[in-house]
Length: 121
Image (cartoon, rainbow, N blue to C red):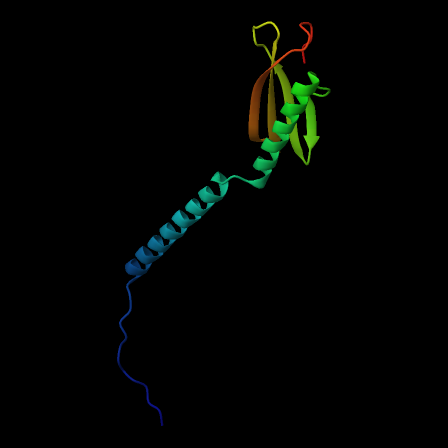
């Protein structure tokens, strides 16, 4: 028949276990923070798409000299077109901002020569 051994196994004390748990939690928290930082700092496809769209809008605005709407919503990205003062006759300035759900994706500012002196975007 099988008998029980009367030997005692060594185990860790409660303090050693708690210290090990604190170290594991600290390493895990640091890893999650680094992972989140890497994900948020990368260039997203939405940012790239917004910058390309703003460049297209800039080219169209320079060609036409005017813009129809101050707010555009393309692919759930809101573009705000705002004329700026240049202080120079014959030169117009515009700022185009892109936002996605309140988060800024980018901004483009540029100047262009007005076709007519009376013309303002």
